[in-house]
Length: 212
Image 1 (cartoon, rainbow, N blue to C red):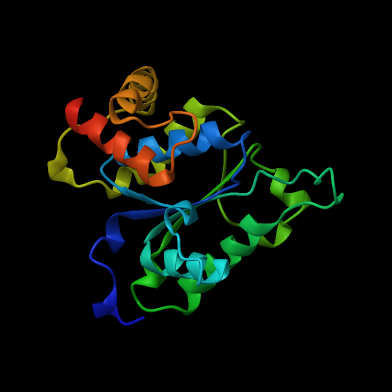
Image 2: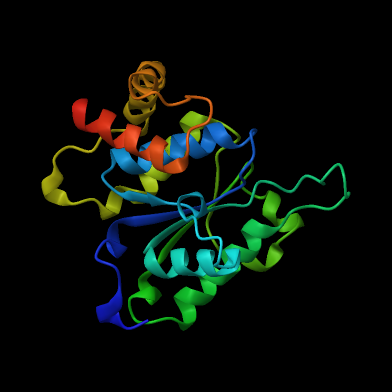
């Protein structure tokens, strides 16, 4: 990809590569909120709907179009039906690392945040990433928000004003969660079955109406 062909929002886009299941969903939504509250653009495979495009190509397009990426490698449990783990996230982490090494000059500046439930657990199942900084969220929504905030903090626009702490963003997320059902009711959305696009829209609208 040529430098001039990068999307206009490349330097503000954050690809979230994580498990998509009910257990992980609270962390996913919290990370999306934190990214938006810091004025970045969250991207996910959930926001791409093209039945004619193979899933791996969707992931590759997202990796190429986002300077920032978050990869949560915490889901290593065995599938109860097949007795095997799902390793999509580590695969896509590898693709992202490859993009940074072999891509354009812009891609060589890509920044990755690798998350897990515990900091050193990766050594057991993906030891080749030793030397990378692994951040632990311990399954905590507040910890995940603070980790993402601290990671993005050095890349905020200095003229944007004061930067909220992770604790502040977490409290704002709690307020948003309280307001979300009424918001969805007003728009006739099912709060328990929100698409990624609808959830992101609600987050942006709430943040715009509740400035820090």
